[in-house]
Image (cartoon, rainbow, N blue to C red; front, side):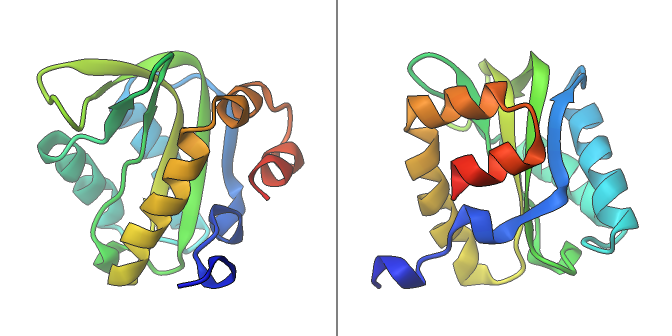
Length: 156
């Protein structure tokens, strides 16, 4: 597959779901915050919140990077009405259980919540996100972005 047909994170950004400077204290608050907006805007069903919480507790999504943690929570396609990638930049790190070691946690300031309803899209989006996540400069910019347009520009 050539790059121009690959899924781009920027194509799935939805302005109401770019959440900057949030003050969530834990993953439950973060999921509830994303769900409130996503549900109100018609992106998700009423099963999104219970299912993303359940999935995160069974299959944690925290990734420990060299100098920080990030998380890529997601859930079942049948809870997604309109596809999105939500970006949450929290003021303080939130502890996410680690994907590679669920007994450990990683401090996460930037979480990418995936709302995808095409089975093949999940893997492609994860690959696309890995490119962003492995770029320290991009993560630094996301953590300090002052508005939603800036986030969209960074990810374009």
